[in-house]
Length: 225
Image 1 (cartoon, rainbow, N blue to C red):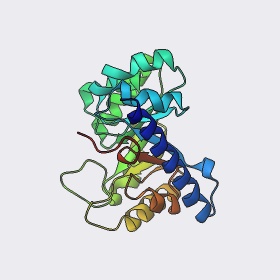
Image 2 (image 1 turned 30 degrees about the vertical axis):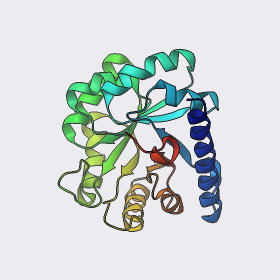
Image 3 (image 1 turned 90 degrees about the vertical axis):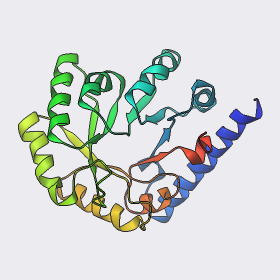
Image 4 (image 1 turned 180 degrees about the vertical axis):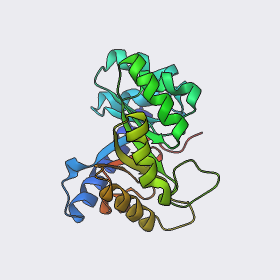
């Protein structure tokens, strides 16, 4: 078991170096790109070496999984920043507001309304991003690009939400660059500063198109069982 954590930290170091190189190639400061280490399906024994190495920004896909493992880790490392990067059901909104510091997947009026209500009740305001379904994939969550401006207006005007950025997941079978470019264009015209784009296979491209947050799991933690 001793070699596994060491390998994880080595992979994290490689990813950090690749992000730095991609940023410099794009004429950007490496510090402008935040690495969100995606830990879905991985337990504390895999996460602890990364925490001990000094990394503090992590992402989970499911509220239930986050609830099961992160409170104990946070007790030991209180400066953890936790991101929800998977779809959010309205009945999990209260827990999401309590657990997460950033929610990447605001994607419909109902979830915007419930988040506003729970944030007011709990007195806690996680940072919010709207997910854009750039490929108009029916099986995927997210606001269609042509509806994005109106939805962003609705979030602010109807629900009093401060939306700080956008998130996208390009279709697997298409080049990601046009999807990153489209997301960046929508963000720019709406004055949004956060772009959550890029995963293990395409984060260098995402950085070239202005990603401020890249969501990387497999390249750090290896293949999931």
